[in-house]
Length: 450
Image: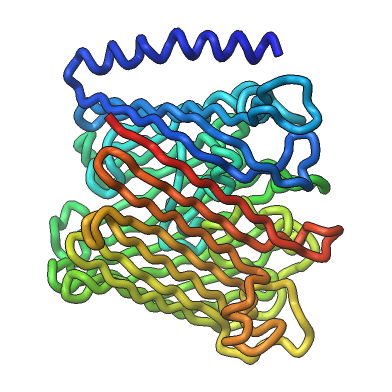
């Protein structure tokens, strides 16, 4: 308790200094104060969900391409049951639990540090939350995120990229990420070359070739049981923008990868935009049995232990042909965005149930509504479903939450006040002794920015 008291005192002293320094510089300082409640696992009994009040302070400073934001959240219970103290602090926010280190707890107090923007600036770096990071064409790393445990747990990661054109060497560049700087567990990178860039904006001059390698040094990091060796995936890709117009664009690509069980996967296809607002992707796939496409995807942190177990126990088998299609639209300056991705094999579903997700259709849908379309309301929603058709028909499984991850965030802004509902619901096959169960988290808060 003395350690916690000291930390609280230091933060109370530091925060006013931060606000004074940034606010006095005229550099774009803003801050938010939030009140609300979170439904979280009890620190004394992780199987029990309890409600915690929260008080948060989120200062934000911007200097051109540079920005930094903090997330200082105090979660507590007033007059908790079976306690002689009038207040109970949510200790996992401030005191390392289990095998956590001080970095696990305090690095995430920094919401983000950034310089530049991916896809716009030749050099960018972002530390903090990662929401949708893809390497190459997504056969290995596709929309990877380290935010899946929010609001329970914030993880501090890193993504960085450098285009050699910044250094007057446009022939090469690289991108890299780590999901957790405190652990360096998921670490990946891609080096790419433009061998014919001297040919300018001609078709050959746009050709890009890359190699990707990604490793998870601790596949059981978020699992209560199990141990395993580091798992790695390596691959190579080719990308060729064929049409680069504003009304219509077309990029052809191919990528191959090899996973730790020596299974191989390969994809080829096209992607682009149509009439500016329609986005599309079409792929053909050849995957060996035992190969998991997009191994490091959005929900990787949820299912990393199960994927390791599958790779560790299933050697490479015969090749299976498959497909992937994605269609999305973006309207009114990206204020309304929707996309649906569906992939699966050409063959019928297995006669005997399999733990290989690539043998079944897989669906991912997302919806984004920004403020201004419907008054002060904004909304983000995502639904991802694995193993479609495994336990029933395609459409029966589509609405069955088993093997699904669901997330939704709704904001309502009135004046300077924002009301936020954050909800996450996902299937955890490791719960109840391996029988499976559902992990639910929710958060309700009101915040004011100034």
